[in-house]
Amino acid sequence: MFLKTHKTASSTVLNIMFRFAERYNLTVALPADQLVHLGYPKTFLAHFVEEFEAIGQNYNIMCNHLRFNPSEVKKVMAANTFYFSILRNPIRLLESSYVYYKDNVPAFRISKDVNEFLASPMKYYHLADYKKNMYARNIMWFDFGYDNNAEDNKKYIQAVLKEIEQNFQLILISDYFDESMILLKHTLCWDLDDVIYFKLNSRSQDTVQTLTPESEERIKVWCSLDWKLYLHFNQSFWRRIKETIGLKELEKEVNHLRTRQKELMETCLSDQEAVGKDDIKNKAFLPFQSGDANILGYNLKQDLDNMTLRTCQKMVIPELQYTSYLYTVQHPHKKRKILPLPLTSFQEKTQLPTPN
Image (cartoon, rainbow, N blue to C red):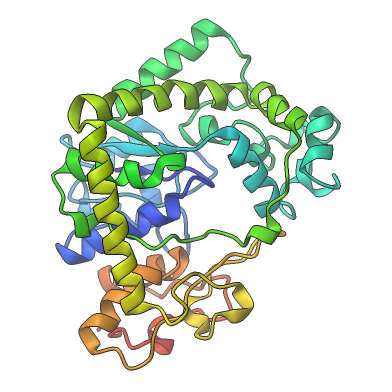
């Protein structure tokens, strides 16, 4: 079970999990009906999963967005389930959230830029709108199921950190994504190709806002719960690497990962890199766009053989399209998901086989 946190490179991890599920014919706990998330931002309930009543605890993977609720997740996932998640430095995360959710979050909407917001966040952030404003403060804390407006109390924070350690066997760090993939590979005894990825749901550099040094320090206070969460698990992340892999071996395997990734990009991509939304030729591969961000995507080479084409397509399918595709594969008798995208039927615009 992967707890998919927000703005933490988690869409790339989801793609890895979906490809793994397809490779080994595993069953994914997908959002029910027309949902694209597992009830988020509501606290997760088992009935948010498609056919939970019929399938019970026979799902192998759960990785779409949800707000963690361990008792309900355990109704869906087997007792021996491996739980992991990913965190990001809250300084970078808040800036990313600000740009991505600019149009949707009341606290962000009326401020000029992220630095203006951080100069006086309570001027824009109203507790009455907390369900709409969760992206503006301690979003990782919220995703793990806790109160993102809770008081920064040492005893409370220690209790939460201990509970997260009890619920999750592994916490990855997106700021060290390649290192995280190697640690995941070792922990789950996977092969290198199981953790190969193309970065998904990233944005163009021209939409990144520059934080002032004062703003960076303010984030540590404004998002103090997330900051302490990150510091704690960043420390345990590196401790675990040193104890299980070693820094020399880690460096060697990261280099192998990057070499393999480069090879696959040369095989698959006509541009050898991600491109802006206006330059994506096949709109079936257009990621969902939000706020002021220009979410990047990919163009595949022409004339790839069928097997290579399938591999490359799965590497670049955006999250919503892949969720919809898997839903149709797993639940062919159900109505297809209608996505908030120019194209809602991924199969019709690609050469992927349409499920029966």
